Length: 274
Image (tube, one colour):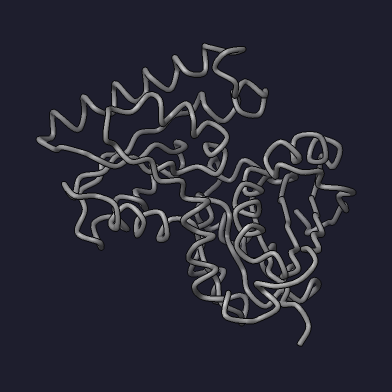
C-alpha cells in the first residue's frame, strides 16, 4: 500500500502549524500544502467569494495533487466555506473549528470557555456555535494585533515583551466580558493557526488552572483518529512534503519555516485564477 496523500489548505501559511502537528501524528503520510497567498486575507471577502476561493483550492489539492483527505487549516474557510468545500470534492474534509470545540468540551469542567481568534472568525460566531453544540458557553474575542506580531517574528517574550503585554490585555478584557456574562471559564481555545507560536505566552498569562486548547493540535488529533488507521500513516522513514503558494513564494519560504519548525524547501507557484 502506498502512503496516502493528505492535502492541507490555508489562505496563507499559518496553517503550517496544523501541518506540523499532523507530521508528528502521521509521519508516514505524504502531504501537499497549499497557501492561497494571492487572495488573502479571506476575512475581508464575502462568504460567497471565500467559498469559491476555498473550493478552488480544495479542487487543486484533490484533482491535481491527488489528496485523499483534506484538512482545512484555515479558521475563516472552516467557518464560512466548509459546506462548499465538501460539495466541491469527493474526499473526507476536516476543518479546524469543530476539533477545537471538541477538545474544549473534553477539558472543561465548568462548561464555560474563552475563544481568542481573528476578527473574521469571531464575526462568524462559528466557535460559539460549535461550542454550543457540545453544551458549552463561549465568549469570543477578536485579537487583530496578534497575527502581525507573529509574522514579524515577535514571539519571544524576553526579546519582545510587547507581545506578551498585548496577550495579557486581550485576555484581561475577555475575562472581564465572561465575568459580566456570569460565566466561570476554565478553558481557552486558540482559534487562529498563528497562535500556536504564542502558546507559551498564553499559558503564562491565563489564570492558574485554566487549560489552553491549541486548535492545530486538536485538529491533528482528530485527523489521526479518522485517517490514522492506514498503516502507511503511522510508519515510514519520513514524510514527503510538497508546498504550493499562489503568490509571495519567497515570503512563504522565509516565514513558513518558522511555522512548520523545519525548512519548507522549495515552494511551487501555482495559478488558481482571480
